[in-house]
Figure 1 (spheres, rainbow, N blue to C red):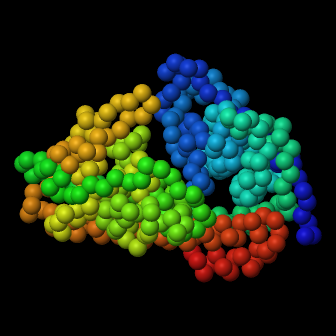
Figure 2: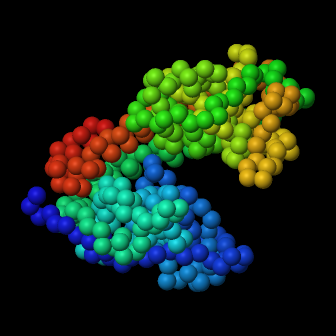
Length: 395
């Protein structure tokens, strides 16, 4: 396409490999610049999540690793190789991440979207049988297609409009969940905790993993459990043929409380209605026995500090992972609001979780549109004006 050329990633700007404070240097940590590792980079979000922060001393010790706003972060070491993020604020990363600080001659946001497209190819260059590594030279020398800066900015604006809407929706979703938790805590609990098994049935998930497929019913992952919200972007699919086998014990239904009984102890989420899926490994569910105790009410009782303390107290600490003794859980006690408060509170919580589900559905649609347009735009196969019309209808 006219005006397009192949360019090395290194030609866009300065490449910076991150670093880490010395082990045991507690003075390096504080409330300053965010410190980003692959964990803080989410496949479904453009910007890194705020993890630990460095103190003034910590930043001074890693001064050469400091990245300005507009830097593009790319994971080059480990099984998260290929994760990409865009820093809207100054950050410092660990050594698993190579970052590009683009010059003014290029659009940093365009480079972010371009690397999102080329990430699978870059990942395939990784060497190492145990830990995949794309070294700094390989990363810098990899070639991508790029147009003029004006065209870069136009492409970034189209794709950025979708990500901006996704980010706004994400903030609304988080606010709805926070409000739900606050509503639950404001009501208080009854006088005596109740036996969990009297309120809900407990079902265990499969102890193996099916063959993953590109589409089909969901094979839910404990990574999808995010403090009350089920993030399906972190789960996989299984085939229709395998689905009956993996739901033989139980098929999750709307209103079930999904939780992890190994590693991510204490985390739980509400199963949204209309989603066909099976429990994943290390996952179980609670299903309310009574309409008087809705799934959302049971979820927030599970997430409440009192039951979280019960989880910590009763967890079995193994040599490799911590776990919950599922056979004993029905006998545990859980605190709920007084009987007279349950119906009113359930209605509030149900409404807030309906908002959470609607936002999640909209974001999946927006992300699918972005992922459809992205490869066509960053390779010059689709004109910006054609993509703009599609995006304006969506947002």
